[in-house]
Length: 239
Image (cartoon, rainbow, N blue to C red; front, top):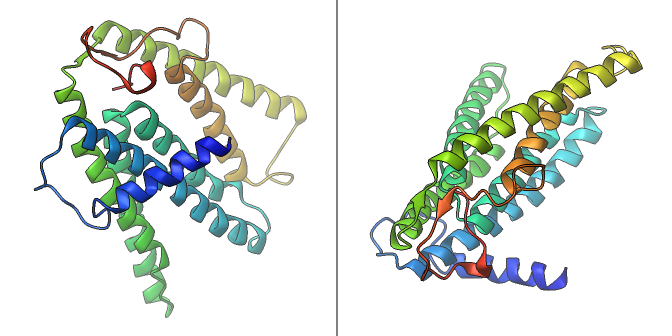
């Protein structure tokens, strides 16, 4: 555990040397530098998750409990894990989309607060950091796979996505059955809390499917590397 935390801290320091605070599309990337950038950005997303968790706990306590605020923390952890451990191009693109949506929602909230006589721009910094990290992750992930001569395994992509859809549907249905069996209603639990828990119930098996921890999902990498390609840790990456 200590070695893992030490590795994450080292990756964060390495990415800080690569001017993580600004978009750098001019410096040429090698395979090793692209891998280092991805590991650093993934570690940085872990840092964002911790920062968001602190804010979430404060808001959660102030508003009397709304589990919806914990969703961002889970997403940061998931995106960081995919980018750092699997050099995922799909995870990098998803992070960009998430950053764009977050920024748009933040601006919309600011406009509403300004019209009501209140302004707050604290989350803009967080949204911009997500965009900067994810944009560099997209560049580094595509460069890494291009220089690794990897190719997409279409068959595995289709099978794994279908399995993820099936497991997510089953998990979501099971959650609704439990809610109905316990007779939970809006008077006992807020709709936002139920909605967030349902979303987590659906997303969790998706993540476990891509990780290969559910039945029929192991040994199905999205990316195939040449025989002479040396992967970090000997583990194939998820595209």
